[in-house]
Every structure is written in C-alpha cells, then in structure tokens.
Length: 180
Image (cartoon, rainbow, N blue to C red; front, side, top):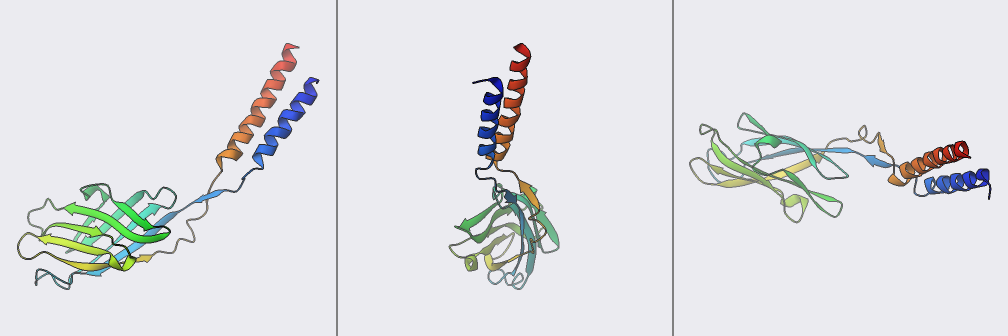
C-alpha cells in the first residue's frame, strides 16, 4: 500500500471516530433561591425570615456559591463548617447541606444548618440560639430561570480525540514523505 493510500485510510478512520457520539454536552450553572421563616424554638425568633441562593454546576453538582441572609447578616460558602453540597434523589433536587457555626458572639444564633430529607418538602433550617430554645423552619427552594445559562458547549472527548488523531496522522504522513 503506498503512502497516499495509508494516509487516506488513516484519515477516514480518524473522521469515522469523530462521527461517533459527536453531540455536545451542555454545561449549565443552576441557581435556586432559598426562603423560609423560623417556626419553632426561641419565641423571640419565631417568624424571622431567611433568604438566600445556592448556585452549582449541573454536571459536577459542585456548589459554586451560597448566600444566606438572616437577622441582618449575610453568610456565604466561606462561612460553612464543611463544604456545602447539593443533594439529589435521582434527578430531583432535594436541597442544600450547609452548616455554619457563627463566630460573632454578639450574633443571636450560635449555629444553623440547612438540611435535606427524602423529599424537597422535607428541607429544614435548624438553629441553636446563644440563649433560649433551639428550633427550626421549613426551607423552600425556587429554581431561578436558567434559560441563558445553557449556552456553553463542551465538546465530547471522542470528537477532540478524533481531531487530534487526524492531525497526528497528517503530521506522520508529512514526516514519512520527507524521509522517503
């Protein structure tokens, strides 16, 4: 088989690989709003509202940011005792696991936790005040419109590998042609 035939065969093989599973994976950033109010525990805290947001990558489920507002203070992912994590049951978003031990002794809460259950309706905010009774409240998560976040295309590895193989076969052909 001459060099041209070898190059043509290698090129067809590489192009054939590039047609296998060439669909793009769409990486998206997902954001949920967090809201609720304290329902039990220390009487002076009952009815206190809390809000926030959690943002994460839908492919890796890695939390990229958290904000949580309560009693005039804002907390974020850097305040967490351990890395915040989103929890799913299959494709169903259950909520955020997020725990903060408050360092500021003047703040009314010593610690709080956002936790999940077996259903999105089981999500809770639990707290321990500096004085008084511990308590909780339900957490509601509302999906923020993500229609603008699906624009990032990530090429499939097989497409990239095929293009590299095609390029390398061309380089090999050129080098072999020069040495002949």
